[in-house]
Length: 215
Image 1 (cartoon, rainbow, N blue to C red):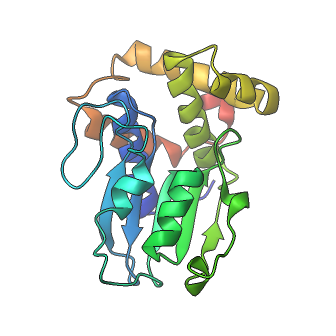
Image 2 (cartoon, rainbow, N blue to C red; image 1 turned 60 degrees about the vertical axis):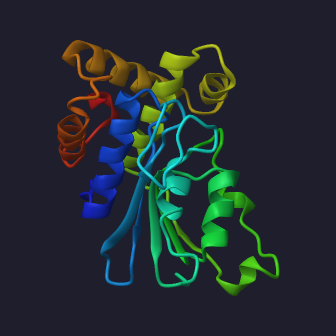
């Protein structure tokens, strides 16, 4: 399995922080033309507050939105890249197009809410066509997708997200159960105090995962 680069690792760390805080586990970063991180964000949908200018306590408080909202509206970002843990939903794809960021990289597929296939041009968005890279077809991609499922197994095990994955990706259900069991055994799955260090541990572990059974 290929290793994580620094931007992918940061996305995974942010996703794990979101998971630990009870939000949907997605993290996102914006890179400039030289690969420098210029903005970060994570899901904060079910959290009471967020550092400005990020959103919280709202169904709109998605990771990609929280990263993109930091960009100066007077500038254009055709040479920038949005890197995100999970395949973006329609909301986040719209935010990407409106932000003028020209490239999208995502790690894990989302068969429930992922909407990359809906990308299309209007006269407005055609000014900056979006180049798309993803998903990863290795253990990192599986981990991110399964972490999303784990969130909903914990939050709403009989809901639509879990039902769709049971039908389309039962392998992710199994991995998600393993993730929940591992986080419960370690006592760190919802530890807000150690979110960053726990995320780093998980990210490091991805570099050595050879089979999905490990998760």
